[in-house]
Length: 160
Image 1 (cartoon, rainbow, N blue to C red):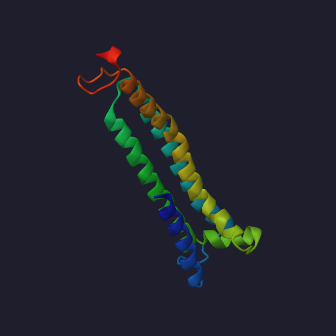
Image 2 (image 1 turned 60 degrees about the vertical axis):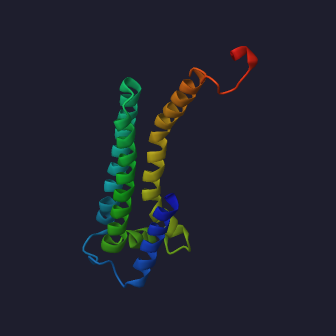
Image 3 (image 1 turned 90 degrees about the horizontal axis):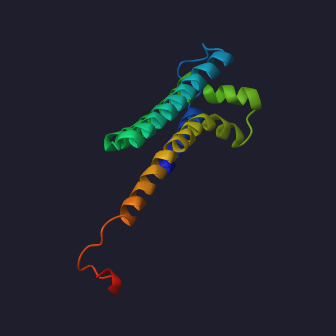
């Protein structure tokens, strides 16, 4: 599903280049535009990381399947939120214009730099959920290795 999020980020840039100016105009300065786009994105990324890590500890302590589902929902919501903040920043506040003012209109580099904030949220989500996924894989392996053999399922003659 990651490719769909990246397509949405690229489409936002295409839409921004199709309109003359940001929808909310230039009423925010350069610094305020940068802050209004990056601070919420940073908060979303940190909140996702902390919540998923907390849910991982909860799974380790209790084995709760609901915490696994909550971690998955958390990541989905933070991806939506990061893309939404990016769309508002690019189309409404002029985030892409601010990046272009800072580094120039370098082909593909300014767009990649503008998209790096929501992509960093995606990466933070993957980074935070890795311990949970590893825990689940290890528990499945442990359960499989310690399961009793099923009678009549074949196997070695010594097992019969």
